[in-house]
Length: 325
Image 1 (tube, rainbow, N blue to C red):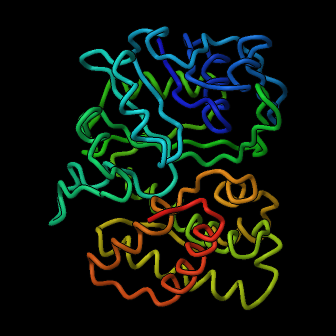
Image 2 (image 1 turned 30 degrees about the horizontal axis):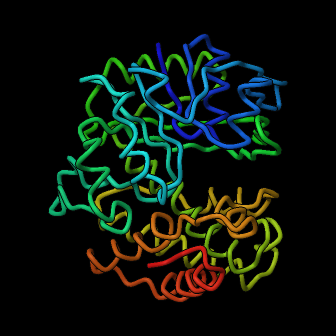
Image 3 (image 1 turned 90 degrees about the vertical axis):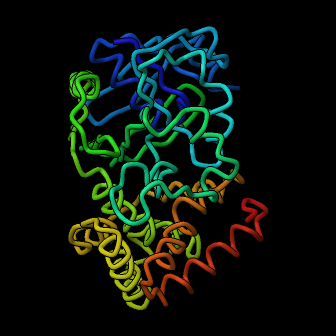
């Protein structure tokens, strides 16, 4: 398969390295020093099982890479409009686009089947560029359970011994291309689950991002440190339960929040949104924090703890000049 990873940063670079390890024909869209390093020395991914070293075709210009069988988009939500404006050279008539994102995705209500079916989310796709230029019919949802960091240009560290990705179409339909992609990712050493209920997977991870993202911003700490404080741990439980209530109101099962909280309590990894704050990068405030609260208002779910904690976290991001609503 010809697979392009659009945005070969921490998570995207890890996926690209795994695909190359499994024998796929891999290309990446990257930029700056990271792109230069990949071109000169290859893409290096440090995993618990050893170093994955590959030489994907790398460019900052999608025209140079040509039409793909699958495109995997791994940029953060604020960059989606730019991707939509430039992705066309990679797309054939039937090329699916996999969106590996944290939080609520722009396509969430496409083929959702409930009373909000077809609802667009302007905070994530402000001018409708992604919906109109890529189209929700191409979209495949992906939830990545992996902890990755770009430790220097061209070198990515994947900290988890277990790296899991959940894949699924918004309409839950079976798809032969999706199955082939899953096989390619599995061949590279990733644990892959294909589901007909991708929104359940989104909410399972989002609960932990609601907790870890908001409290990470406020404490500037890995969750293992922050949740050692009993008061912070109690707030985390209330946040998770409110998230479960929102998911349930939307017809999704977010799973047992205690399982995720148990993992957070021993986590030494700083949440990606906290890393963005510390490095002065644009933050995924809307997809991770603001839009879930919008969904709570749409469904009439009370979220007093989230309202306070998210309000404080958003103000911290705004004060740092890394978020504008």
